[in-house]
Image (cartoon, rainbow, N blue to C red; front, side, top):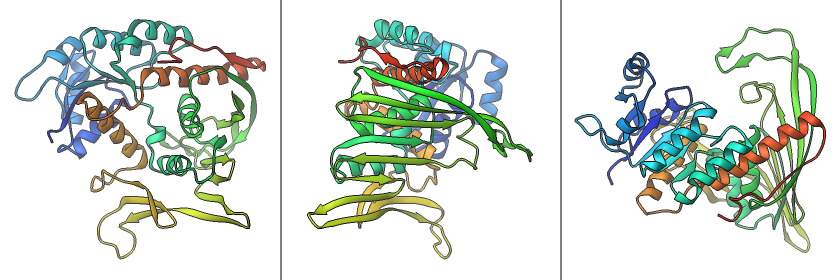
Length: 365
């Protein structure tokens, strides 16, 4: 099958994640061009990323030449306030969009964007958390009914809309009304590592921590726990609990009821090559439970980190969608709901008062 062709609007830190997938797997993905605001930035991107650049969205979707081709869809990876405008322009041109999270900066922006492009069916959101291998394995456990009906999620891992997207997927929660309560605390925490590398810090500094509960109704709930810079700080590890009517998942251990006298616990096992005398190179093969594969890495050979695997999964799923071979991977309605609840978490934390989100126009999309 021909490589999936996509363009990119934006040249920031996150945009490079998408371009890198094409560089590592040219047989699967091809970047047609990247939109940069200036020729100077374009020259930098061309030299560093090895892809052609253009200055406008119109050029991106019409350029055809020896090194460019019309994209099948376009990734929008720009600052939050710019995302809605770029998305609207692409939809007006009839081009499918994969918009980075969040699709608009605030609740009013989400509503306006939905009113403008929601009915087009052309917009997907690049929410990658449910596509990360470990989370995909946990989702497979829940979908198989091994812990019964999922009723609650406790997550201390990623922030706001990313965490909400994973919570809703694990609980099977739709886009209805939700009650959010939150508190913010400040405590000393050493910050040895940040996005740019080791900080050299040797003494703790004040860091905020937000704790929130989300009540989805029908007995489904979530506990959200996130600390400033938790993505990078190795002193704050990832934790997740998924509780169900017949058992629970705690990180990578699944405890479940088997019969009237039996409860068992089993680990989710990650098989990785390239360790000790294995000469196949470092790579993820699969994750399994009691000998049954829950998740298999379809990008084996590219030697990707989990976050990169999730990005590649989104690109692959979006390509299959635009070619008519698969359902939409993450519709705009879900991306809007994720960010709406993330905003509610921030609002409840800021005021100390409960926030009740309404049933929005995208609820039944």
